[in-house]
Length: 360
Image 1 (cartoon, rainbow, N blue to C red):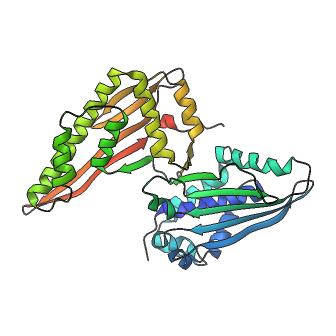
Image 2: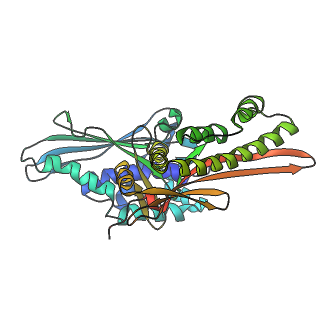
Image 3: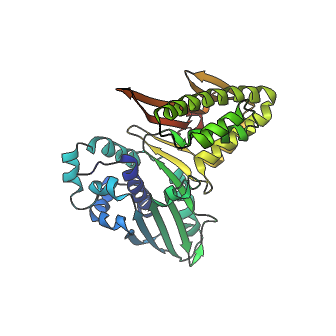
């Protein structure tokens, strides 16, 4: 049995939940699990699973509405969570706990921003006092975004037509997360140089890093090269953080603008996808519109240390919360004189202040 990846599985689960909201005004666990049992995951290897979720009359006019789902997920990490035997596979794997609780959040959390967006879309045909032919297409594609090099963040796209014309100016796009606050996992060397350039910061030893990390040690093979690569990446991170301190002190407003633009780029991508993070106990959302609002309210950014991590806190009335943070992770080992680099990563982590407040 293959190992389930909850994040990959939830992309499909969430798309079914969206279809249910369009068709029935809210998501039902029985509907989600019924559709799951019909999915042939073998199609994920080369193509997509396509399913007409519901065809129905809607409103007083009434309108003819069809809601379709197209799904292509990563086969290896999702195959046991779908299909006619998904429940039996769950019981054997012991993974039912988290997924079941996350599905429950989709079913019971009604006051979400994405549900409000769906209601606004539905009002376009429900409140125009005429009979319309409506088609809603929901596409969950957990593969396409990865091939974009991180530029496209959306895993799930929603489009709608009314009498053959587009209802939305642009498709609704959602970036699905499953209990994870990681916005981006960047290449340490290239990611740190990008951060320096974005903030207009200066790096005293920039040329040394370019000739070593960017050239000589790009593919470290010998024991010495591996040690040097790990040491220099850590040194680059420390100098990058120091350069940010100088940039923040030099021009607070330029620093604020660069801070918010970095967040938008790494979080929402070129498709401006809303972030939906479904955890066991709650759903968190962040949208480009909300981050733009925060930027208008924010007067300046405070940089704070949290161990070796660096956090960006917003100042302003009712703010004073973390927007995001940088985290550097280095794991190395040495056994019988053999030095190994297990992990060198540079993360951008979303802060609590970046998520929409939940209306109760």
